Length: 77
Figure 1: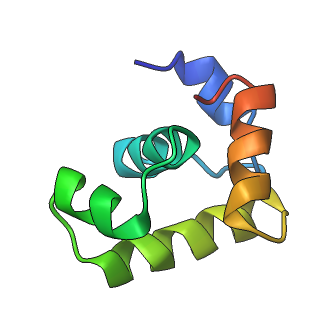
Figure 2: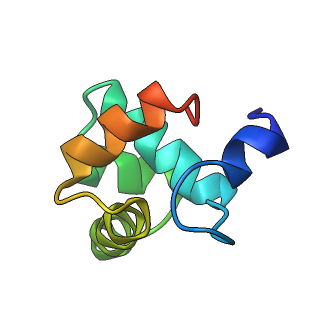
C-alpha cells in the first residue's frame, strides 16, 4: 500500500487518489487494457475511462499515459 504522505503530494492540493484510482494506474502501467482493468477491479469499462480522465485532470496532465508517468515519478505507484 502507498504511504499516505506520498498520496498527499500527488496532484492538486487536497486531492487524494482513492485505492481504486491507484489500482487503475498500477494496472495501466503494467499494460492492461481498460477492459481488462474493469474486469479485474469489478467496475465497468466506462468507469475506468472516467476515472482515468479524472485522475489526469487532478494531476494536471493531458493523458492517461502521462498520468502513469507522473504517478511513477512521484511514487504514487
